[in-house]
Image 1: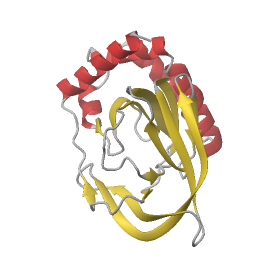
Image 2: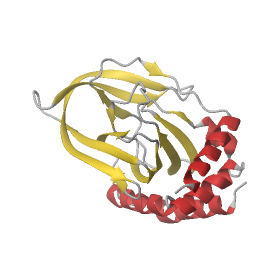
Image 3: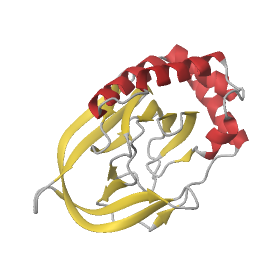
Image 4: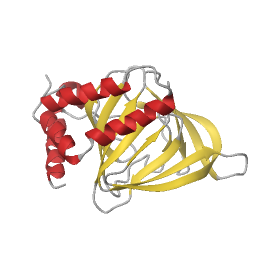
Length: 242
């Protein structure tokens, strides 16, 4: 079921993150975990274990797909309601439907940049007339599928509060409600190790777009197991060069 690296990663996740931590402490703990697991040598061995079929390839493939924000989302370890560890492979100029979206998450998150570079903007909702105009949606999951459902909730204005760049070897953590937008700002793909954690997950997230209206639902197309394992093999090969 699990290779040595998978067992060790699960032990680190549960030992560090399980419990009733306040959100700011949980986010900080998640950041330390992704930094430890994201070191190129350790992550390469974990990905290689998974690419050989260890763990739960069928279950993880069902939750792996090309995300509307423009990256390949590969689930590595499914920790149930408490933590989900994923690899994100960002492609420059992907032209995804939601690449300009500003959004938050269902739970606290942390990310470690393994290769390449991300840019990220942080926002807050502004007062009338303050900031950029955007359309606001509540995003949730469809009851009988994993598709995204987008419910329009009216106009909004957003104010930019921070712009940062995260190169390989750097990490960040965000509370669930933090509005942000991230993108690959290099000519080559960027790889990040991403962790969502915490038992108290929100029922919906907030999505803001200034790029025009979104469709009411966006389908998720999960990977076949063979495609999931091939993507992991490609990622392991990419990490060997680091």
